[in-house]
Image 1: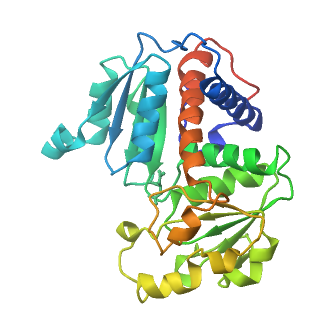
Image 2: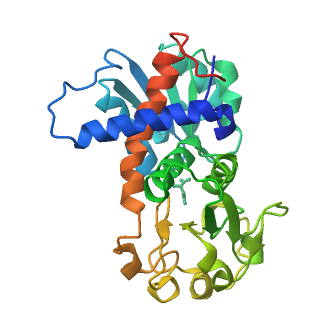
Length: 308
Ligand code: NCD
């Protein structure tokens, strides 16, 4: 049984296959041709269980499943028996006994999704675990970069700016984008950088901005800090907020996984700028998750594994 816990669970060919499928879904959604709706997941039930708040990822997965004619059972964690002391393994084993086609989980602890793989007989899809991984976010970011910068991303330069140390989005993007030949530079104050990294890094955005083709801004994830180790978000923003004055007329793609802290991560004016692709990322997210669900629920079961 295959699961999607982290981007390295997918080979490069599988990633390309998922991007290709997502592009097909996007092209056919936006075309005027009246194609019959794709009902490939008709009669199939998928469970979503999110132990951490989410706006985009949960609704994106649920839209994706419904777009393919599938049904979703959302476990309301605040009313679930984990509140009565049930372990998440027991919760997963019980959900699994209801025969879902897949379980999509988000958890505040790194490692929770992989731990659950032992208790189930269906694919576990990671919707984000602690500061560890967020594979579908990295896939949708890769798709957005290819749409904006072209299919050959080798040697393109992408900056990741913000609270990198606490970010599962950064982790997954570093693994996936590097595999496609992208050169990544980390931009953050010292306390937001990972303890050790082989990647080039700087504390000074203006030092690298001219060399970047794209920049991925990240939220300051205060909920993952054991203690506040910086002055104030205002001080942080002074050096690391993306503003029109730092971007000027540069040809650069601006991305953010959301939720955006306005005027801390990205200045309001810049959010409205056509170089800012935040909503394109959200649109791509639904298509990527449609492709991921079809691949894990249908294609792998039918033995159509792409060169793993
Ligand atoms: C991110 C997440 O939850 O990991 N957002 C998302 O899924 N689109 C980033 C964040 O929380 O800052």
